[in-house]
Length: 258
Image (cartoon, rainbow, N blue to C red):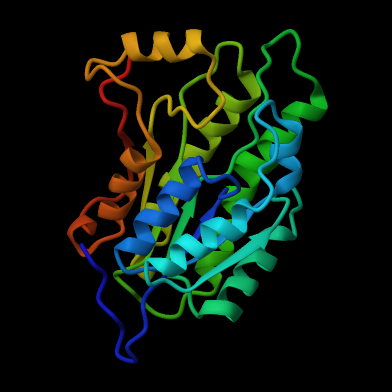
């Protein structure tokens, strides 16, 4: 499913958010798209990984960019705190300046700090919605505002989750993300946009305990946890010409996880 070059011989450009760690889903998606013929702009936010249990990964963005270039892609890394309402426009402008017009927006970023109904702070709730929901809307809007005419290659894809118990601000803000993204399938169809949401189920990117790994495997009929490349395969298909008839869908790509 290699992408066709445009009339000037250029590869299409994808902006992938949330590509801060080599083990992450975002990095897997960026690799898959690069291998299938896309140039890649990607965002990361080092401060988020540093404050999370898995910690930062110094040199990760350089290593990822080198991998993408080795696959034949042009690549540019953009650091951005997507809780900042100005960040979306800045990210799109930098991507366009570096690589040209963006045909695909793939949103893998998130804020995810577990807490429930009784122990979620207002500050945490607001940051989850700022990053997971508001930033998605602003990125989609910025993507659409820079689109010129109709282009059947245009894609908007967001990664979601249905985990809410004990994870209230994350799950609730992801539900809002779903609705925002699916609205784009109708509202931006005149630009050629196909918009879909993917629920990848539990992917072990370094955050799981041994107990969580075992429980997730037991709950998956196919007998293993998902990998970033599993998610990347679906993203790559949706971004291909063959995936062009699929829009306005929330797709489960989870090995049957229940």
